[in-house]
Amino acid sequence: MIRSVQDVVDYIQKHHAGQTDGQGKPYWKHPYRVAVIYQNNYPNDETYDGIFAAMCHDIIEDTEQSAQDMLDFGFSEATVEAVQLLSHKSDCDYLEYIQGLIDSGNKIALRVKLCDLTDNTDIRRGKLTKKAPTYYAAIKMIEESELI
Image (cartoon, rainbow, N blue to C red; front, top):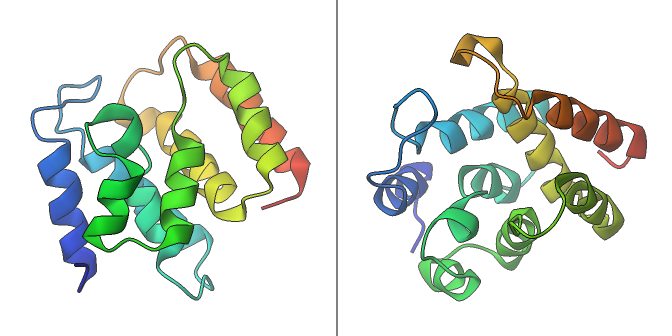
């Protein structure tokens, strides 16, 4: 059961344990940064759904956790729905995946993805990956959708 933001931090630390990012740092710090970006960009969000979706945006995609596991832990249906939409299947072209997010109209998922892309293209994290041009195209698509 979720009683605090710390419960969600503990959840992502547990389920991303042993995973590292491209710089060799604990992976859970990436979704944590995405949540901070979300909170800074959308301070008037009246629920924790967006912040929790940001913190968990890679949970289904990169761990053994399922949507049901998240519901059982205490996440709201809105949070879980956003995380499901954010889970990119490897056999789907990235920009088609972004278009699917736009087509869903799910504001939480779109905002989280924009924050995720912001973190993924932050030069302070180190050298940008070869995916950067695709990420910039995705940012443009989301911003032009005017859904956020």
